[in-house]
Structure formats: structure tokens, C-alpha cells
Image 1 (cartoon, rainbow, N blue to C red):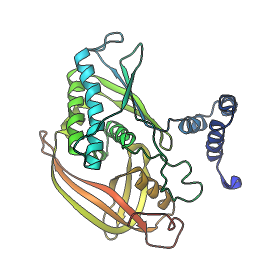
Image 2: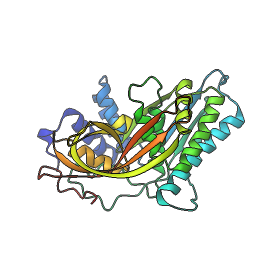
Image 3: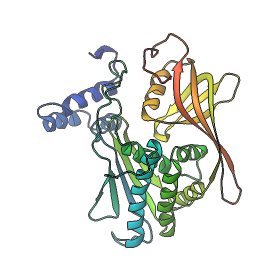
Length: 330
């Protein structure tokens, strides 16, 4: 049972939202709760996060000069939707090392706008979840065919595609988590976006992750296309010790300081690793052992820019503090 006395107001509202969602009369209970927090944007967002669908939804709304009224070029739009779907399929094939995959991703088209919402199939419960009480009950649902994870990775790539960002390494890291086949398909989708000079707005929604807004300008699309045309030149493992130094869920990255080294950002290989980082990072200065894949890539743009990408595969504590009872990867 939760320790109500030590919960923040936001945590209490999230707990109330979950209880209302699963109650006998959810609409009445949720209407009452929503009214009680009216005017508080943080608490309203907390309720919205808890009501997100179990399976991932990725909503993409296209706009720009070549969108007239609520219509745009049919061939380019159709190709864009197909290539995003193909990106999800190739992501699953690459992660599971499958020669083929029957994609049952759904897409919903909205009336009155050029918008497509990609909907992953219903997920299944993670029966191996051994997180302590209060951590595992509302953890990210496992999607057995990885389509929810694929949609989230696409969202992270789009969110980090800002040519003015002071941390554009996050984009290279996000791209690196896409298997080669998925990068090829997403590159094709971005070619249609650049061809039509579209901007993309929307949001990613999934219970346990929440609601993450997306905005991709035409310049951001061109920036992303250049990055997707880069060539991977090295792939090496790295196991090291150090400390976790914060994380940014909205960007899909965490920070690590190796013993005797400089702080660097890294992406999470799986949602489960992401949750483990959240728990372990709660204790400042905790020493951990982390295993990464290190990728070195060279871009195909004008500068042939080289970049190094770190992807966190596993992490385990090296002390006896809270969190050592987690079922962490070996």
C-alpha cells in the first residue's frame, strides 16, 4: 500500500487518476477529479499522462504552404504514411532478427486536417516485472512485438531534430537506436516531408511514458534527412564504472560520468533500462557499472561530421543502497 503521507500532491493525483480509471464508474470519478484540479496545468498533465492508452499512439499532423485547406499531395502523403509504417516493421525485424514480420500497426486519419495517428496493437503485461511496490504496478507495458517501442523511438528522433539545438548529439543517438532497415524507411518518409516542405506537429501517447509533444519544422526535417543519410563506421562494446548524472525523459537520454572521464549523454536500449536508470539515479553520486554500445558515424553532408553515440544496454549498482534488489541485467 502506498505511503500517502510521503507522496507529493502530483503523486497523489496520479494515484487518484489510476484508481478512478479502474473504478466502476470511471467517467464520473474522472470528471470529479479533473474539476478538482482545474487551473493547475501540472496536475492536469499528470491526469492526462495516466489516461494515455496502454499501447503507443503517435499522432502526426502535416502543415505548410503545400497543404491547401485540409488537403495535400496524395502520392506524397500516402508514401509518408506507408514509410512510417515500414519504419515500425523494420524496427521490429531488426530488434528480433526476423527475416519477415507481419505488421498489424493501425492508422487513423482525422477529418478536417492532414493528420495520421499510428496505433500500436494492444500490449501484454510484463510477467517478469520484479520492481518494488510502487514502481512496477504502473510501469511501461511491454508490447510483445515492439511496435509501441518503435513508435516511441520515431517520436524521440522527431523531437530531437532541431538544427538550432545546443545538444544535437541527442539526434545521432536516437537515430542509432533504429536498426539499419528502419533508418532507410524513415529516411524515405523524410524525403517526402522535405519534398513537400511540410512541418509536423503532434504527440506521442502511452501509459507509463505519458504524453510527449512533437514539433518538426521544415528546416528540422532537412536536418534530420541529412543525419539519416549518415554512414555507420564502427560499433564497439564498452563496460565501465561511474555515476549517473541526470536524465531527460522528453529527449530520451541520460547522462553518465565515468571514473576519471568526462560526462557524456547516452540513449536507453529498452524502456526497462530507462526505468532502472530512473530508480538508480534517485540517489545522487551512486556508483554503478554500465554497459554501452558505442557507435561512431560519419555524416554524408557538406562537413562529413563525425559523431560518437552511446547506447546504454544495462546498468547495475555497486553499493547496497535502495534499488539493489532490482532484477537488473547481468
